[in-house]
Image (cartoon, rainbow, N blue to C red; front, side):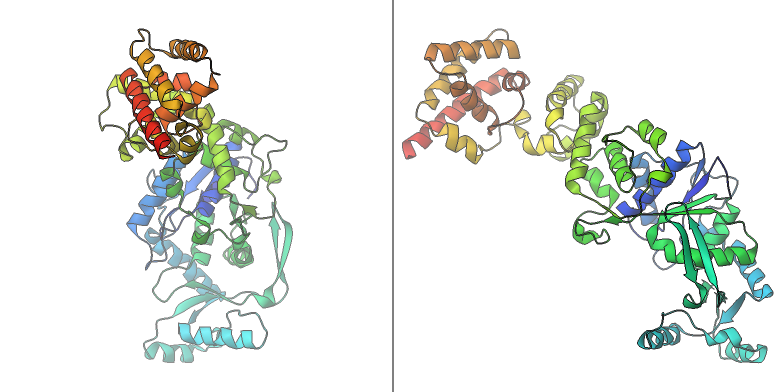
Length: 494
C-alpha cells in the first residue's frame, strides 16, 4: 500500500504497563504519521485472553495520554474500521480463517501443546530449526473425524510454503530474504477459538487500511509469515519498517533489571512528557547535526524514517536527565507549576489548597531553581529549605564553615542587621551583607558562605540573596541564630 498520507497503527497488548520499548514504537509511528499528515490507529490486541486485564488497558491509556500522543481512531473514539478491540472481532477472524480452510491453505491441528513441544525439542536435538512440523497437515477426512470423536478441539494452522524464499522489503533494513523451509507452519487460531497474534494482526491491518507497519526488530522473523498469510488471502502488502531495539546500558534488551521500564514510573520520578518524547525519538533516529533538544512541533517537522538506523540504542538515565533539564529550562512557568504542585503536596511541603499568593511565591521559587533542576522532584527533595526549617547541615557545610570559631559572631551580627532591615529584597540584603563584611574587615566570602550554610544547610545553590528574598525575613533571622548556636557548639567540641 503506497500512500503519501500514511495510516499507521499502535497495537498494545493489555497484559501489563506501558513499557518504554512499546512507547518508543508508538513515538516513531506517531511522528511518521504526523509529519506526513497521516492517521494513527490505536488497536487493542487482547487475544491473550488469560493475561489481558482492564487495569492494564487503563495503564496504557494513561501512559500514552501523559506523553501527549493522540490517535485518530481507536476504542475510545471510534472510527470507520472498528471495532478496535480484537476480542470484539472474533467473527471477522473466523470468516477469514474459514476462507483459508476452504482454499486448502490452512488445516485443523489436533496435537496437544506437549506433543508439539516434544517435536520441536527433537528438531533442536537434531540440529534443525525448531519449526512447527505438524502431522495433522496430511490427515485424511476419516482421520480428522476420529480425532474429533476423541473430543479433541482443533487449532487451525496455516500452511507455509516449503520451498523458495519470502522477501521482505524493509524501509530501514533493505531487502531481507527468509528460507521457507526453515519457518514451519503457523498457528492462526487457538483451540479456544481465539485468533493468534500472527493471524489477527494480518486481518486487522488489511481491514483498517494500514499502509505502514512500523514495529520493533524483534518482529522481523514474524514478517515473512505475515506476508504469506496476506498473499493467501489476497491482501495488498503494507510497507514494513523494523525499528532498532531499545537496550539497557549492558546492551541487552531493556528490562526491569536495568531499572524502571514503565513509562508511568518516569512521570512519578519528575520527568516532563515533552522531554520523554524528545528522548525516545533520539533512540535510533538521527536528526542530523549536533542539536538534541526539540519541541514537539520541531520533532514532527524534522522526523524522517530514512534517518532511522539499524543498531540498537542504549537507554541512559543520565542522558534522559540531561534532556529533561533542558526542557525544564524552556518550559513555561505556569506549566511547571501545574505539574509540580501535586509533587510538593505528596512530599508534604505544600498544603492541599494553596492560596493564590502561595502559588505566586512557588512560581518564583521554580523560576529561580529551574536552571539547576534535572527532574521536577528534585526541588523538593534537595532544597527543602524553601519550605521548612527542618533540614540538616550537610557534612561540607559543617566542616568548612560552621566549625570555625569566628563564625557564630558573624552570623549573629548578620541576623541583627537583617532583623531591622526595612526593605527586604535581594538588592538590600546583598548591600547589607557587603557592608557588614567591610566593617568586619573580612572578604565577602567569609560571610556569604557561612550565611548560605546557615540558611540552606548546604554550600551550593542559586544566587544567595535572591534565594533569601524568597524566604520569610523572620525565618532567615531565626536560621542564622540557630546556625550560630550550632557553630558555637561545634567550636567548643573541637
